[in-house]
Length: 170
Image 1 (cartoon, helix red, strand yellow):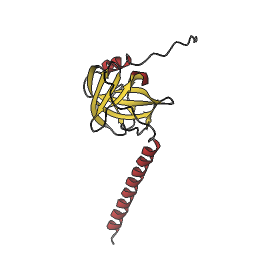
Image 2 (cartoon, one colour):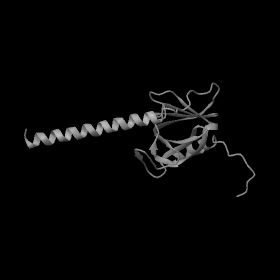
Image 3 (cartoon, helix red, strand yellow):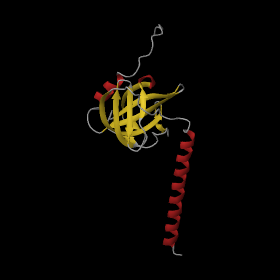
Image 4 (cartoon, helix red, strand yellow):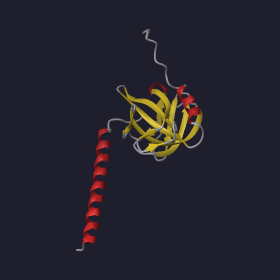
């Protein structure tokens, strides 16, 4: 075996090890997040206010944009449509069931620039903070295919419930 053949064999072996490590890491993440799932199905009488073509980028731990979560069915990037309704947000992604985030689950909507696997122009992403359950808040990142994200953000912010007044003074 020549030195060149040996070098090629070593490179192929290293590449296979890296791919296997990536596969095992992703499977571990899927297992870790298997208890979390996004709410599916749109309520019967939800009235669609507007529709927007979007690229779904990722869902991460709240305020930790580099910590991806593999929440079913939001584990993978996809193209799709965001329908704003009078009761919440319907996210219809290609090849996945419709995710519906009711207004009561929404915690905040704003702009973002960075999330796992994606860096865009300043404020080019729409970040939707929502609660998976009583103890877990997550951030989902979307990118509009056309139009100004601020218009969509203003529309979505109207759906976020306001915090109840506790009477506490700051």
